[in-house]
Image (cartoon, rainbow, N blue to C red; front, side, top):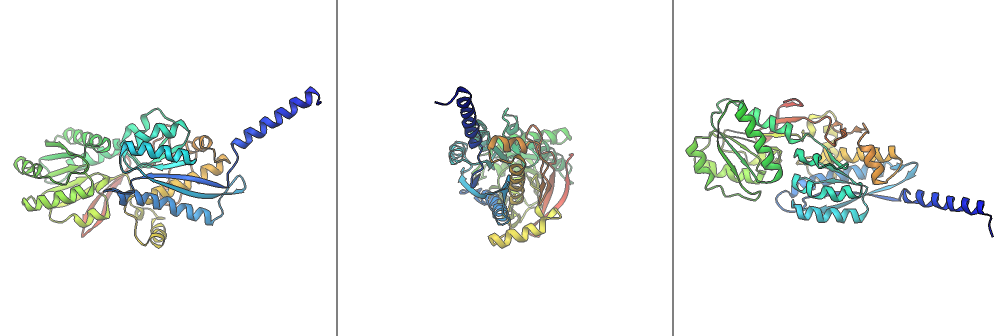
Length: 380
């Protein structure tokens, strides 16, 4: 029989072993990606997934290590279908899969529905969603990769109000938490600038029949159309505006119309602008090499925010190295303080409240079928 001192020593040693085992660095670390992979927003969601995948492939090829141990990174991707209920369900799927962090979601309403599930397990949620309330949920795990709508609404509303020839304004949203909130704030900026919002409407995020809206725009004499509808919706609207001979209309939308697809559909009206906190990769010094790598890997150019999810994955990897752990709680703590180099955007730093410290918003316009930058600011 062992002496009591030996028993206590062995018990202490066993306890220490168990505790260290709980934080044991696994051979494979899983990174979750939750985005709309099907439906109208599939191109944007898959773009985000591809950004993560490209970074993971590069890190694995470099021989990624945590605390000296070689680790294989693996992407676990789920389709949230741009639906809050589905987003919550797939969030639990990622938790059950044992992911260290999640790059998700695209839609603000989906991000907010999923956030408590990740937070319960200390899993960092790196979202490209822009509704301010996302980081105001009182959760320690909600992180935003870009500027929020408080800044974008100022850009959208103030730029629209300052457009030459703009006299009567319509503001139309998609009735989602993201779209309605951004549109309300933009409308307030227009009114603040002394311009009239003569038409204010909400449609759902799937509407493409604007047969009741177009006559109303015509009767009200609207010449600037401010919107948070998606690209496919604005494309359908433009066709209907042209048929109604409202070709002098200027359209300015949020980041959901800042897509390659939209640039090809912006024909027949006077001008199409977009505000976006998702700054084009080509605007950054390291953007062109990224675009070349992305195109080589996926045989196409990115259409949305792949460079942000790519950068977020590298920052996440740096946080794991700094934490010397793949424990979600320790990694999340590091993400809140680390100032790691982001390969494309250079700066991706999360404030204590989860907001992006270096967020900015750009204004773009379609010229000859492509988006060109008009201006960019972090202080609208």
